[in-house]
Amino acid sequence: MSVKAKKIVKKFLDSDVFVNRNLFQDFFHKELKVFWHASSGYREYDYNDYHRLSQSTASFYDSMRCEISHMISDKNEVAARFTVFVKTIENPNEEVPVGYFISIFKLDDEKIVEIHQTSHPSQY
Image (tube, rainbow, N blue to C red; front, side):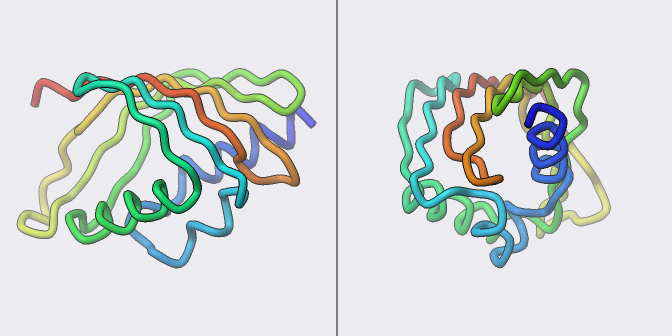
């Protein structure tokens, strides 16, 4: 599954899932668990919590995209290093980096079921 898992994660990272409210269920398993070490502290999310987070994000950004620098996979797990860029509702003509991420995605039933993630904000 490693090639297929990598394609699914790449499709997720290339998507507008955090801007387009209708895509969330296409990528995430109902048993989703997210373990996130951010500069603001450690957080855990389940499917519903992460869905609420994505809904609130959608209200702030006009667009969001990821620039992937590294991606490796093994069986049903994919590790990726990427930068997230956004265009805000207030300024849709300027794209700015908002954060740098390293994430490990675990897949089940061709959906993301677990994420272990570390991130820090850009210095923009």
